[in-house]
Amino acid sequence: MWDKIALILLIIGGINWGLVGIFQLDLVAWLFGGAGSMLARTVYILVAVSAVWCISLLFRDDRELAVNNHDR
Image 1 (cartoon, rainbow, N blue to C red):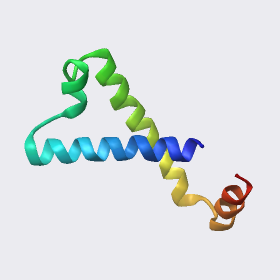
Image 2: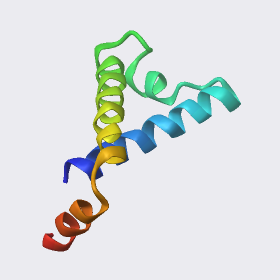
Image 3: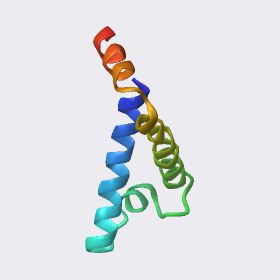
Image 4: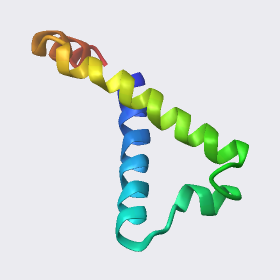
């Protein structure tokens, strides 16, 4: 479950960075009242924590992931 939540947040963050790069539009900041607002900063922090969490995916044994996914 945590892996999926982290991946969803990383997708949101990636799309946001793409919008910033292509259109200079920070959608998170626009939706939540500016980049400095508490809500926007919370989203940014959650995306960062998700990125750190997903680093662990690189080091997990493929067999462990298969067993964990099979149990669900």
